[in-house]
Length: 265
Ligand code: DGL
Image 1 (cartoon, rainbow, N blue to C red):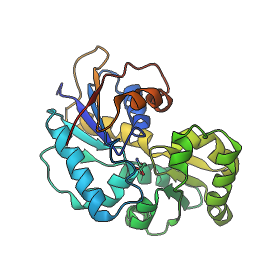
Image 2: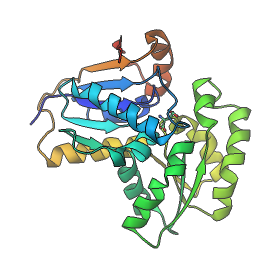
Image 3: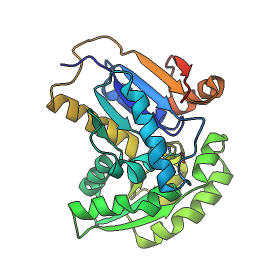
Image 4: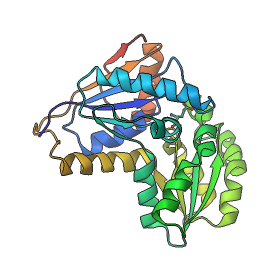
């Protein structure tokens, strides 16, 4: 049993989609969230910069006596985590849980992956999937416009549909039957993506899979909390608190009290 909080970080507020799932699978756990809103986006930055930012995010969470770190950010998970070794607590990225889930669910062995430019360029999803199943075929597409579309409130519009048609047509033509949403923001585009890909294509949300994976890991290691009361959640950002509070509800999808603090590096 361990009553310390779970630390979660993301390049900004998109990681709240993972927090939403964490709250649903482990409502009693305390959570400390850090969103690097002052330096978002990570998705189009160089590897060196993403590694440096990710180290800062992890170091910030380590100051909060956490028992586990979840890198909710697809970009940080794929580009930086492979270069970050022992920091004293376990770190989960979003890749392994999503790859395992995709391999379990695919019927034809053709898996699609979408993410930021950095995530897709790293090729990490394909590497992990093929290390688990060399016969699986992975088809990837970078979708750089998806993040601004979501953050500007265009998720359920014709704009989103037009852009998504363009990004997804290649994957659709390849006949993937499973599609990993490899970025924090993409669950908010699930309706549009699913419409375009069709009913037969199963969407895997990397945040949901990471939340379930985290629960299994904490359970296996005897690190779940033994409190049976709603967990306490603290949110930290590196830029304006107000805009985080305003957009936060969109990502959390329910009424969660947002105790948000501004931090400085
Ligand atoms: N959080 C990032 C991810 O999941 C998306 C936003 C960004 O580019 O920083 O890849």
